Length: 414
Length: 150
Image 1 (tube, rainbow over the protein chains, first blue to last red):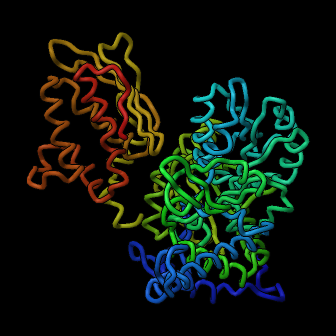
Image 2 (cartoon, rainbow over the protein chains, first blue to last red):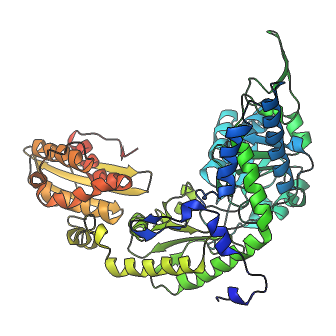
């Protein structure tokens, strides 16, 4: 299983780890092993230093002033937007809307795209493995309009049932919203096929990319999706910044979501003329430094290459999965054939909360709970799971430590 | 086992987690209440049989972590036979100690329950220990709606 040394171009794991200051600390006297990356990832010094350096030299409000600092800040803010465009391979910068995070991006589409269109009897189609943030915004708007929220099922391995998904598409379907990668199970959904199927009916597709973007290359044009949402903080960037990609034609047809400064061209007390894309959706002073920091995170990933990151994480996941299967009483939740670096599991007779507290004392940070995906927990008939989620800086040695700690816990509770 | 975990996970906690006492429903219970911790999914159903203002019998069912199971189990042992007033006073003392509100309170007032005092050091776990007690408090007050820690 462990063949990293045999590869010709070894992954520069030591250099990568050196970039992340937070990894080099002790927790309860043990070296920190950070495996809660699906919740949020640690930041490289390139991002941390960019934030500090931006505030120290170039900070001012954007798109406002004629003065030098405002011009510099605007240039860097827009350069970050260009970095995002490149990262997603969007056609143009105007299709990149800065928001607070994935949740806000989805709410924006629910309120601005769906709300004016939905009528009683219409349907929004999601999957059975969605995060609450890709359920509740649709529920809110469906309830208000008398529309129905339909759910495409998954199988026991945690794979979307594509046949049944296709059956659920119909003349009433107004939008499809699916996770690119499940946060609770790790499942990577066949987004390209999903888009193709939905487009046969002329139905637009929103992809929740919060979990996918840190782990695999994303090309929105190749996927064919109409909206793509992600957060900066899971992508080694700052909190409070995220992205909504939308096809120009769709964004143009949508009314503004929030009103205020920045999103206007001309305001009188009688009427307002809205600004162009993407500013129409960016009311108020945006998270300027956070956007610049997100740009730095993207450049960091581009230097490493997401293909290399993906390969490293896939090998790590395969190694961890094989080791986990050797442990008696451990059950992996989520065994899709196409899966990102998430290992969700239960231990027979031991509650995930106890597992989480014990692991913390071994210096290992994991998530124990329902992962904001209660319907997924219900489906697998568990109250919660323990989730180890890997990132580009995790190592085989850390997987070994995790598995050894799990064995200890089983012994103590046995 | 790691030394610094012993304060929270004492042998008595493991014992009550493996063999919870009074882990059963009570038919014709005078009070029945459900408790839920939405953060971790812990659920408890508490049953009380009352006689002349005393808790004649008490049972619980549900699923939870070792801390919440042990806390519920210990609670049922201790409040059985107590008057409702006495049980409520115990709740106040227990709550004040595990949430660290009153350092002057003596652990010995809690008797066996003192084993759970270690939970003070674990803010994310305090609700595991208090869920059964909040449910009891609600049952004593005759509340019908389920109890939630959030």
